[in-house]
Image (tube, rainbow, N blue to C red; front, side, top):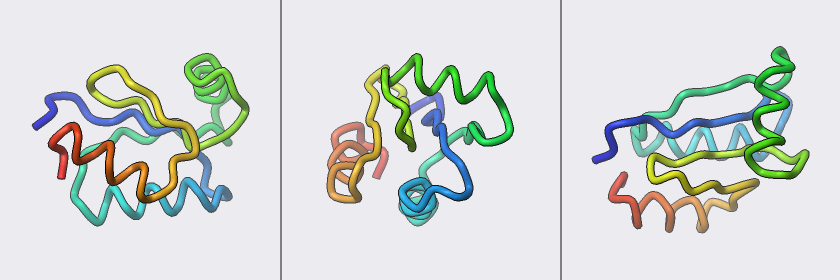
Length: 84
């Protein structure tokens, strides 16, 4: 199991963010949510990490990053990291 949570950059109005968050919550995976809508610092950090202006941006304990992952891709990543 990971010792640090996934860093999740997203916004409440983003359908992909809501979907990815629901999947993480379904599996009980620990994550730290960073709201890009109400924080310019979070918004800038998400762009800096991914190089894109797309969300969600997920930073995993191993340092890898996924941007706008589909559920199958997110499931695969969580399985690879033994988080589910």
